[in-house]
Image (cartoon, rainbow, N blue to C red):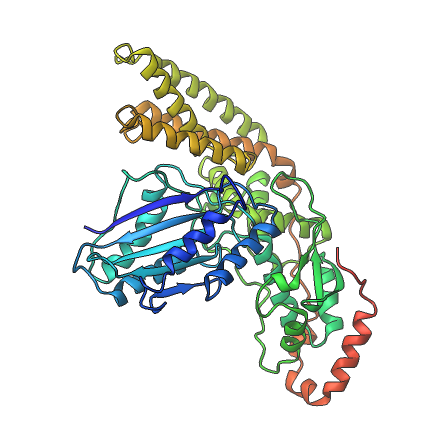
Length: 510
């Protein structure tokens, strides 16, 4: 039976905090175990030092060099189940499907034992938004199992079994990105905006004009390493704690195709992609309940979601440009709220408040019923009961963790959970995997309470949404024959355009 193990790579007690990380990378890339590096792959470099430097660069960019440094994931197959090439394909396809561009990783197939196995080491800090990777019990079944099942069954290897006896795990994207391709970050939004601006521009002047129309503050800076670069700042940018971020995003951190030089080249390409302004950026759609459209509250909720999911389609003022991008960051929650409003026929914020009161009352009722359960903890000795209660309390905190819980607090709680699991396996075994009917009902009610609370909190924003006209992104630009423009603009003229535009753009970045 194929098995998997997931362990965290902790901060080193002495020396540099990341020592265990570089040791793990070097270990899995050992030439003696991988046929001279033949069975190694990565999205962060070729050599151990390159991969390590790439991971550390991400940590430094987001100021998260301490705490857990990374995670070590192992996929192991029984002797004779598969060869190196198949094991390599499984590891490669898993990394591409699970991590994508979200985290730097390196994977390597070791064939120094009878059983073929693939090691994966990945960064603890996400390269897109700086979120730290988190894992709690149950994430395997929810997020990892479906991916591994699909891949291993494709190669006739059967399903992978998670080795729960191993020491503790890490975390799938869960609240952060957790393999959700539709999860939006500011890096992704900026790239989408750049793509749209390039699509409708024939020179840099039009490009900068379009980016400003979308609300961006643009600066030209110069780096000794990267040369001329553009920094982008939008007033909608938010830090995790909800405060407005003054930190701009520099183009050389946006990836290939988005540097100053790349943008100038893309603008002048005669066969560049023309992006329709009505492009849908969100795959999930709203529940279609047409009979509810007589309620302004519901209409506004639908328009708010629609403007976020197709935000390039509408002619929006700066305040609205800020709103749609913030909504896009939290589009999954917005969709959840909007569908709840429609499914439960919530026609006003007052009705939402009444519903919330009813849910709170039901929570109290279910808690009272649960308190009258026939079983009790009377037969458990005091010390064991204390451990059991501590374990359950920490577990609840972790599975309900929100952005306001710091990475340091999360990791401290996770470490304590590991200690309890290692020292008291009989006490914690199975306690949280078979929830009672009361627990299941409470979980649903708490989720409903969170949705209603967000609906009420955001009611003023929702009700302020108005129907907007379609955007007019200089339609005549995209209708021009760009080939003719290319023929009429020499390379020198292109440089002159660049000079004339950059003279009107502030220098230095934010």
